[in-house]
Image (cartoon, rainbow, N blue to C red; front, side):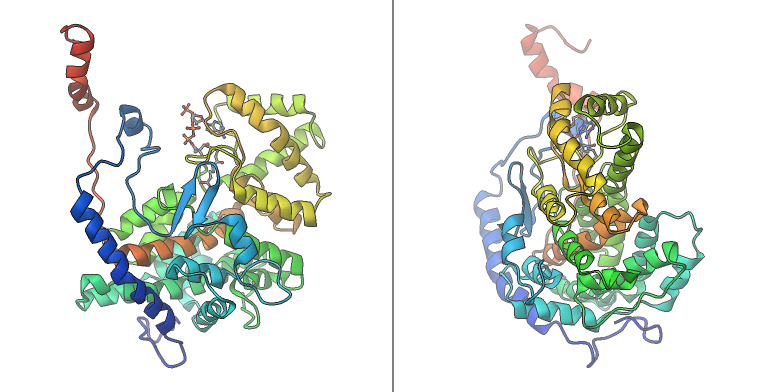
Length: 464
Ligand code: CMX
């Protein structure tokens, strides 16, 4: 819990100590550490891949160079969190009676503990979050002081950075904590930060679009549904369910994507969680990454305006080619790893079929899904012509009256920090190293290739 009179709070009696969660993580650590130690001892110098010249110039696409135990993206089946695909999680993660989609608390338990949660476990996390809710007053002042035109993602990142003076990990490091124990105060920071994300997101929404209405959590509601409540949607059970679904689907996508990798890199220097998560969000705010959800909705609205409704396949193809020929991307389509339709798109598609089958923007999404893979595939250069998570998420928000498209990435960030904070705790628990890959210059690469080229050209120097 944050209080300004006690800016770096110690755990107090009214805040449940994450004893169970901390103990569960601690229980599994010796086995993990030993497994990794043996792997490194026996096979430390065994190659597990290669890097081509194209990969070095091409954003390291496809290079296996990071470790995380929390999640992995299969190119054809999508993300698996602790080994579970999205569909399994939607079916099996716990939820109270009468609630359709799982509690974020259960997902967080799974990410953190590496054991499938019971409803009790999920509720324990929800209770820890509830006990830690409360933003320092100066964070609100900071948000209010920013120009009205500030993008909501900038506000989110700034607010998280502003909370950094409360970091338990920064304090523990300053006091001389042993490196192998650093994950414990990181866990404390992770719980404090994640507990307050719905409140922060709602405060940003209310400041920008609801005349600064106060965001007051309802202790009877779970983490996800509370966001809906705090932006004035507490009487709409469907929107609460959508929020639960959204928070589950966006929580993690292994740690090589731009936001996760940024957060991981910053955290690898032993920067605390507030510093690394704020940095990760800045990467998420890019249009090729998380901002694609706002860009998708803008593109769909422009399409609707152009065609006056659902376009014919020919009209859609023409509009798509116009976008591509203008040197722009089709937002919501393509992926750095996936090579098929994103299961997170499909889960949201199912939600839309069930709850908003007649929505006019959903009709566009459907038509785009029918036509777009063929059009993008025909370009011959786009490796994944299928929709990703961002191709539909904004449409669902729009349907429920969240029409301020620039806010959508804040929702993405709110959910994604569940994953980033879990990666951060485990990265410290397993003692992953500071990152420091080498860089090359083009002349050095040319020099490295010289023997190959000389052999190919019969001894003549290629680069002369
Ligand atoms: N529209 C137009 N061109 C696209 C494209 C799209 N949707 N997807 C890929 N391409 C282009 C690339 O820009 C690249 O072109 P150049 O060779 O001229 O640079 C070429 O096709 C090959 O790219 P790729 O290997 O298929 O895809 P990348 O790994 O380079 O890029 C991604 C992946 C997501 C950045 C890209 O597909 C894209 O820009 N998509 C649209 C934006 C988007 O939806 N982003 C959200 C992704 C999910 C997320 O992070 O939230």
